Amino acid sequence: MATGELTPAVHEHHTSTGLDNTKMAMWAFLGSECLFFGSFISTYLLYRNQTADGPTSADLYDIPYTSVSSFVLLMSSLTMVLALAACHRKDQRGMRAWLLATALLGMVFIGGQIYEFTEFAHEGLALSVSPFGSSFFVLTGFHGAHVTVGILMLLLLVGMSMFDRLGPDDSRKVELIGLYWHFVDIVWIIIFTVVYLIPS
Amino acid sequence: MSQYAEAQEELELSHHPSPGQYVKIAVILAILTAFEVGISYIDALSDVLIPLLGALAIAKFVMVVGYFMHLKFDSKLFRYLFVTGIGFALAVFTIVLVIFFSAEGGPSPGGPG
Image: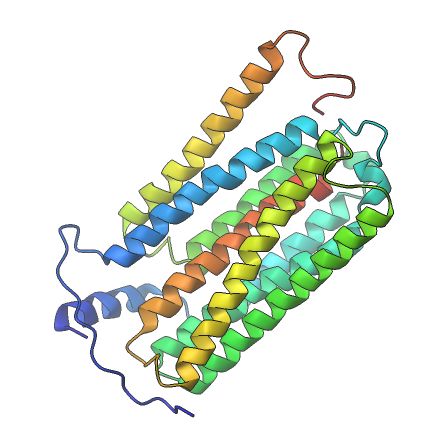
């Protein structure tokens, strides 16, 4: 197992902006993701009261349960930023521990979402039952898919670190995946308020 | 890593919060979340609930983006890229609302809340 050996130096070039191109690309990607989720949130707001004969949000939502899920995802942002701080300190063991903690918190969140979806299905809400059901499942399902991709990337980072493929000089990789992770967190901050807390 | 990249990273890191400060920010975020959930149960606040919840969500959003994503300390160009995305999202939302409500008949029974 790696304990912080150096990997071959990465050559970075001067850019016309003086900024790292990969980080710039990540911010551009996150900007486009705002549009992606913004569209789904808009659609949900338009259709949330169109429940046909299916269950309504008031019948389904369990706010204390979702609050705990939100808290878990919020804390995963803390563990992610602590992983990056450990990476900058060249503390490989600490970085791996915080990355694993972040992935585990993400898994808890996804587990909670799967349970919630199952409960809603038992209550009669499905993708095709009503415009409310469609917009709810598409919005929260795409968010869950993003969290799942984030978990896979975090586990990949942990694996790379364990097999000497992620050295102390590769903090940019951790930073970029961290940016993605924090983004799914801020999207949930909005979803939690708009979907769950604001009454129909 | 090249000297240029090292210098760039050192400059970035010199502005970043310490792990202790990250924990303090997370505690504030947790308190704001608890506050959000708490006020959503208070019937007396129903008239101001939506703006209040919106303000709290924006505050949490800005804290995560600013401190955890380091946008407060990074280049303004990153900020412009991200804010442009948010601007486009708001524009799409406005356009969808206008089209939806101006369409013949508008939303069907129990339409937008």
